[in-house]
Every structure is written in C-alpha cells, then in structure tokens.
View: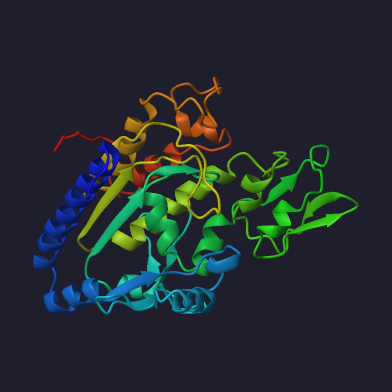
Length: 336
C-alpha cells in the first residue's frame, strides 16, 4: 500500500527503471554472441569489487563474511555473490586504453571484462576528489581493481595545515593504509603509506587536509575517464543515472547530509559522457536546498559541485572522455 505522494513517486520510478533495464538488456543481449550465458549471469550473479577503504569494504573476505552473517550471499532467487577482482583484489585484466594520454592500460576486475555486455546504474552525487560522482566515476573507479584504484588516486598525496589541525584522529580512523599519524597533537601524512584516495580530506572536521598540488584532482578525473573507456570499449553498453537524494559526498562514506538540490529524475543513455554532462547540468540549474552544505556558498552560484568541493573540477572527466573518444558532451534531452 502506498501512503504518500513521495512513496508513490518512488514506486513509479522503480517500475520505470525496471522496464528501462529490461528493455536495454533485451536489446543488448540480441547483439551478444552468448545469449544464454549472459542471461544466466545477469540473473544469478551479484557482483562486487574490492575498495581502498577501511571497515566492511576494506577487503573482499571481510565483505564476504559480513554478507554471510546477514544472509546476503544468496538471495531468494539463488543469486550468488562474487568479487570481480577476486577476494584479495589481485584478479584483474590489464586492458589497453585506446587514445589514453595518462595511462596505457587499465587494471580492470577480470569478471567485469568477461561479460559480453555492460550496464551501469549510478547514483548521481558530489564527490570530495572528483567533484561529481556520475557514470564515469562509477564505471572507471568502480570497475578498477584495488591496484587500479591506487593507480588512479596516485596523482596527489594530501598535506596537513598544522595550524588548523586539532589532532582529533578522524583521519586515522578512516584510513585503511595507516597514512595519517598523530604526534604531539598534530597530524602528518606518511607519504610512503598513503595511496592518495583523499578520504582523510573529507572527514577532517577542521578542513586542515588538502591535496598537495592543484591539478591532482584534475588528473584523477582524467584517469577515471580512461579507465571507463577501457571498461566499455568494444562491447555493447548502456548507462542509467539517478539524480535523486543528491548528496554532497560519495555514498562510500559512513555518513550523509541533506541533498544539495531537490530530486531531479532519472537519466539514461548509451553514451556515459553525454549522460554525465546532462545529469550534472540539470542538477546545477536546480535551486539549492536551504539546509544543505552549499546553502550559503556564493563563490560558485552556477556550479553546485564546485561549491561543495572548491578544489575539484568535475568537467575534467567529461572533457577528457570526449577527447579520447569515449563519448560526447553534446546531448539532446528527451523527456519520457
């Protein structure tokens, strides 16, 4: 039973999404050589990939144990959990990047590359390092193996403004690599341990941590675009983005905040670059939610993502994606 307009809208969005995905799968499967195998894989497998963060998403075996405890490893339909880059994050393919400027090959989880078709479903939101977390971020960073993620993040290591640091230890708690170190009430970053993931930057309550040079986040976005191209190049793909509850930070954090804008809707395209551009553009023309973190930010009135994360440039990803032939930033919106 539906009790409110909001729940009705959520139900309708879920139904629409289901039929969009079903239609796309049918279309893409027709282009696939191993149709029965693809259908079986889509129905019986629930994929995951190793991340760089602490706690439950630190390593594959921890995730597997957690899901076993909560009975997530096998669903009602007999779905089976697997890790695209293996339990230790070491099972990946070295995939050439055609037209890559910063990388020659991407380290992509092997199970990702074994699939005949690729469909991405993304929650559009802000991101502390990329600025905007859309399809390119979801595909490039999401499908990269643990080593691949480290490679993308390696452009810059954070530094600490000791005048602002209060030695609270939030950075230490949230680092999976023992990079931050508190001594005499101040934090220092051990560069030889740091992978450059940027998580400490976002959890610091005093904003005392920042990237060590200006173009680090721009290079990150360019590498994300190149990894995304390695994933989708040469096989049928389709991409969906949900611009709903647009949080200022990535969903990987163990906290959230008031959405920066009202709900916008669902976007879909065969072109991930056009999808990200359109999705971000439509979010940026929305009014700012009054209680969000950018409610009183006036330096970037027409770019909500830069307002939330001033040291980032989300357009670097889509512009570089266009430059290497991943897609185009030009689009036409068709309302369904």
